[in-house]
Amino acid sequence: MHTPTLNKRAWTHATLLGMVLISSSVRAGSIAETIDRVLMAKEAELIEVRRDLHSHPEVAGEEERTAAVVANRLRNLGLEVQTGVGGHGVVGVLRGDLPGPVVAYRADMDAMASVDPDPVSFASKTPGVRHICGHDMHTTVGLGIAEVLAAHRSELKGTVKFLFQPAEETATGAKAMIKDGALTNPAPTAIFAVHCAPLPTGQFGSWPGMMLPGLDYVQIKLTGEGDLAAAAEACSQVVASVSSTAGLTPDHKNTDALDAAMEPGAFISAGVFASAASDEGWALTAMARASSEAMHARCKQGIEDGLATLELGNVGYELEYTERAIAPVINDATLVARSDEVLRLVGGDTAVVELGETTPFFSEDFSFFQEVIPGVLFFMGVSNAAEGMLGMPHHPMFVADEAAIAIGVRNMSTVLVDFLEGQAPGTP
Image 1: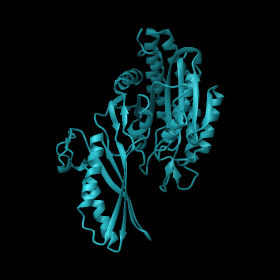
Image 2: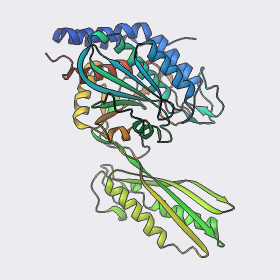
Image 3: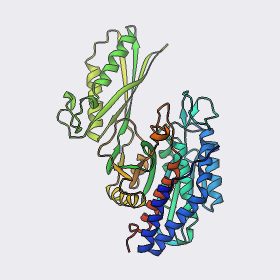
Image 4: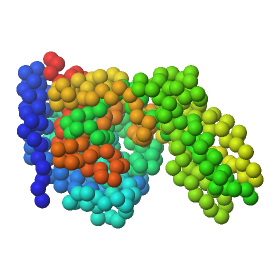
């Protein structure tokens, strides 16, 4: 099996980074050299780790094997390791030999149900389960960061706390880890993470403020002697009617009547994703994503008001609305600005794509960590058009370019070191 290696252009960026850092700071340059030296030696091994994880996916709450792989590798690096955190979560603490702050890095581990064929040679060996969201890539990047920074422990200023999180797909893992003390002893003052995205390999997506919207869960239960199917369809239309994404102009100003007065850039995206009959009646499950607290409130009010106007005959309904079941991802603006500068230094002027808008299409429970401490979630490009690799999470043909692993390790290691150093690379 051919194992891809990082291309010469990427290594050239790394060499230039080392030269820039060495010219400005001997110690920072030394860390850059260590990152590159370890990556040169470990890239192929990290790719094999990723392929092993990909071949043995585990859904949310069942990440036992994945957690064991992670814990063993962290222990072998000499980290302090705690397992069983918030389920199958793993916490690894890397203490540098020099005093400094504490920073956290989060990597989610779970796979998800998928019956679509896995279009890679190292396909899932677990029927009906697949890493179709890229969490195997996330986990491997986290392990790679631990690898390169552990090799430079003697000159590392401060502590890096690694959070390998279970159950992201069910949005329960982050809260569970926090409840189990993942953000204490030692307590980090900032947290970083990446998520695979359909950007070209080598690019990172960044945005200060709301990166991803919050999510509300909506359950509507229908009972009675009337036409339950027709009532379910009517309720589905009410949910869809509060969505404002279809009424957005290109500059994200809304034209929908429900939200005509709302702020520019705001949106609601709502829809029923499950509707099923049973002996007890009919049940609809919906998701609603919103860009602000005001939009969450408007969405709830819109659904309540819409349902109240329906004439359902001999059918009654019960609405259960869970607001902010997943909090929005809010990136700290100061950390984004600082990190973007680092990423451009590492990868060149085009390394960072400023997204300029939020996307209503999915949410992420990394947000719950951000409710405790400031943090940044970056989109990590894993698409390679020339090789036919579409890095769109949850797409049936999702394939991640493995060259992104070393790039992600280098870039995020440098971001973490920069945070600990308290100064941008290259600054005297």
